[in-house]
Image 1 (cartoon, one colour):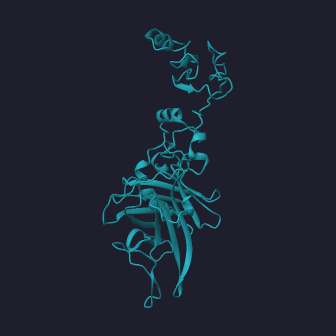
Image 2 (cartoon, rainbow, N blue to C red):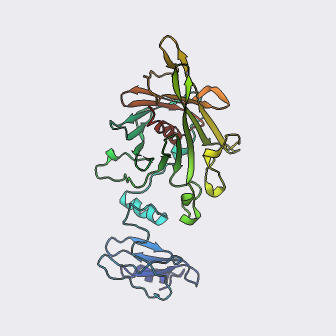
Image 3 (cartoon, rainbow, N blue to C red):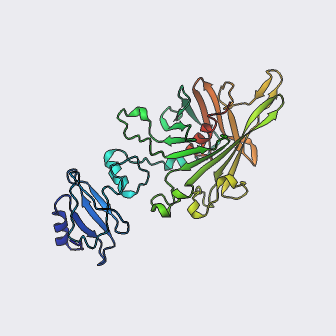
Amino acid sequence: LRATRGRRAARRSAMAPCGETLGWFSPRKKPSGLTIVAGKEDGKFALFSPTRRWSTPTLDDGAPVTSASQSEEPEVEADPFHLYNPGCNDLDAIEYADSLEKGLSREIVTEFTLPMESTSKLRRHTVLKSDDGLEYRLLSDQYAFLLYARVCVEARRVDIFGYDPKDDVSGRPFDPSRPAFTLSYNASRTDWRLTKERCEHCGLSPKHLSCRCSGKQQVAYVRHSTKKLGEAVSNIMEVNIPGFMDDGSPVVWCPRRGAPDLAGSDGGGHEVKKLVTKLPEWNEEVQCLVLEFAGRTVTKSPQNFQLARSDDLSEVVCQHGKIGPNTYSLDFKRPLSVIQAFGMALSTTFLA
């Protein structure tokens, strides 16, 4: 049965038995469109592209899916889009729709990648750390949940989610196999790279046409080092983040658009902004390095830091300080976004 633009053909397609191929959904004569297959019991539909080769699909009872034009159809396999396998990361728009029905859809995280509004004040946030130091939660100034992070030591990465697993005991909509962002680091834990799992430029393109196989969309790059100041050693952080276009919109650092690795960018171009650590000063009275945190009362910690633009060290754009046993303050402003500031705070996890 070949779908056409006529109402009669549409009615015939709608009356097709559940579990059978409804036909090629294409106005062309050549079967170059999509095949619509209806589920046996749940009434769901899946689209199969004739440009990909799969084995014959089967229903829940093992019976093969029949077709009136089997000779023209490509071979397809059962569940080629992994609609019932949420652990698979090779997703497309069809899986998004199916996951939406299940409550497992990916959250929209664009708001976390946008720079903060222009203001002279730092936006106050709070970071809560678990007792084992492997889980972190970012809260707003009103203590509303924003992001959840989980450290995977063996994989040398930190997975960041827009859902909190504590909010749903059934595990939904939280899915540990689908982070929104990933913060990876090297063996020495000095180089950290923050990437967005779904690129804003090519996230909905086929896998071979997206940047998922070539580094993904980079959001920030952080490098840690140390420097001796007086009688103590201070931790140094250097950060490269995408800058802004001429119209003020943030640059989407996508390899498919020719963007180089942020680690190799020197910050001299208009598309890259470089942040550096504001160094503390040695205080003879207390015999330690001292750094003034505006509006915060912090305790001594190697994870405390302040960042400023490389071209203007007098203006702090981000500060992170310990204010409790497992509580940290995280205050920042433009040009940083929420996920960039949170990623910088997470990069200090192993500092001692």
